[in-house]
Length: 331
Length: 293
Image (cartoon, rainbow over all chains, first blue to last red; front, side, top):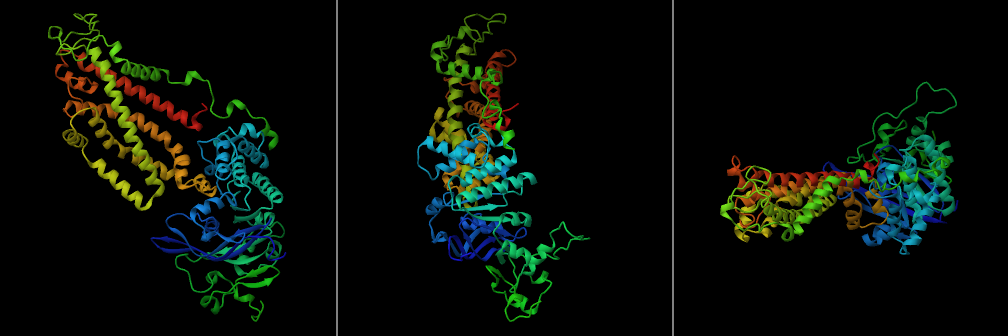
């Protein structure tokens, strides 16, 4: 993969903090990644590691007034979104960057019909006449395989199943033909068979529109199915990034390794699944060194003193662990 | 999956239409009669509401012994026709209720939405104002206003507006707090909506049900406040009839001339009941989830 070609979104050293009464929570603390056209990047990590905050930072919709982006750059096709005014940002949201959230039950406004809601989203950016908007809305529903879109336009959210609702949310998200789609655990609230259908649908849309997708999840099974590359996040930072296959086969950060070990496998017999002992450090009181040090099986003195830089460990594969330093003895 | 979805029962989609049986006809009828009577008062009232006729004083209603067809609902201590006074009184009740609820409810709705949606300092400031307003004794404020503005319809409307906006603001704010955390508000932002648009287009319809119910419940409250104020002399000046005042005036004769209080009291009760039923129906009608029964 050519590293410079087709980069749609580049995030550089993004820092987003939450200013709470308990102190400054460093939810996103120096996150960098690139997202290319037609590519899906999985952002994985446990609850509270900053995945969702990263997603929200990209469209500058952190919870107010606590959340603030303190540093970094978010380059969308070369333009820094963090330097834009709020009204310029409104033209970006929905049109160039869109989002799908976890819970279809609350993602749709209960008092409006599906049609009204698609039109509302479309109407924020397209100024064509009413008629062509309605046609576009039906087209959007057809794209996510909602049967009988003409009638469905008149339905209310409560008249649809969860899977159907999430497809409508997807339809709204891609109706504006965005370049980047941030999908924040879009299938977590769906049951397993519907999950697979939904993922296939997203893939299909992506294949057609060359959409770049940031797929936030904690499910490795979905990552394996959906993502071209994976970024593993831990305590506000990305600890390892790499092509899905390479990262799954040979994780180079102890956290990724431990996560992989805790996923049950069909082959072989395991009496007891290994788990990662301990808790991640509190994000308002982070240690100076590696944040995984206290839970790491390979911890050394240096890990507690200095945060390891991100080092290349393979083709398009990098990790932030001292053990990957060229001079360091291999395991 | 798509196979199943193709066949959609069209009648189950959208708002079902044409089911007349579910409309609250009784309350529609009472409200319609009230409005008609108020508008057409000079045409349908059999007598002048203020014309006194001492020889005819305290006549009972037509169906009681000693009643006459000239005064269907009897006469009061000054010989004024109760039916005519009731008809003209409907005007006062309606005007006061409409003006005070529109103004007070409107202010309350806006304050509640802004306060709940923006949160932070704005919220603290607005909610402390609400607290301050709610601590003032109702009657005291009204009396103060009456003294400074002079008694009359306008004073009553202003006084009631000042009193009720805070109740609306508080309840609406609570609803907004619940609604604004839902994902569709965040997604509206993602789709490029401004804060103003989100408040007006996405939040308001979701709190409208509560607001409407609150509005109808307050009609009774407004009529009663108007009655109290009129009784204290801070409301409608005496010759103009108002229902509340009629109830108050009849209190001292309740043992001998029951109709003086009971007739306007029944009118208040019917109207409040009608508006409550209407509010119930409206709430269900506005909530798409309650449409299919």
